[in-house]
Image (cartoon, rainbow, N blue to C red; front, top):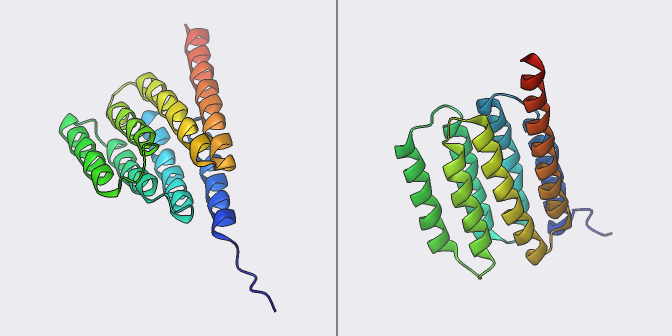
Length: 172
């Protein structure tokens, strides 16, 4: 009798799918704190996704990102931003495995700076940059659901940005 357990790759793709749904939903919120809290949950799913792919440096960076997203949803204190930048760099130094990890690091650093900005638009623009960096990373490590996830995040983010901008212009 065969073991009915799922393969680590299949589990990773299921967590990536959960991250996709959660992240796309978060981008439809208007308030930056709600976007960031939704992304906190999406990041937890994404971290599990990387864990099952044995991409531990990406997993650590995404866990640090999840923590940062939660904290930054409550404050824009730049001292905390610098703390999270240092955590990302330290974690990267401890878990570095290959040059592709530099894309994950760049995404994390850009996202960290963006998360601690007061403007919802600035948060969205920096997230778009991180989505491009993560999509490139995911193409190289070949995780199809995560590639689609980043493309969908980018499009959802853009749709939310345009929808909220149009609502403001209509109100004027």
